[in-house]
Length: 92
Image (tube, rainbow, N blue to C red; front, side, top):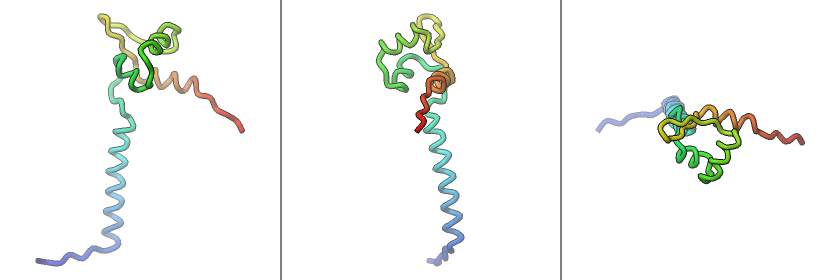
């Protein structure tokens, strides 16, 4: 059995490769929603709201949607825009 010597540089290179791989995985996870169009249950899960609250957001025009054949679809980017538009910045 041959012995392999691992140098500090080898460990540093391994660390950087590992961190890059972890970042790639986290970016895929943080973008949790890879689809452009979400159905109502997906939006409710994403926002943590009830069906009634989602209906109120539709009725009062807060959250735009598209209806095709009885199925409601929401554009993920529109949801993000609503969050950005309603962001409250506290000044201390």
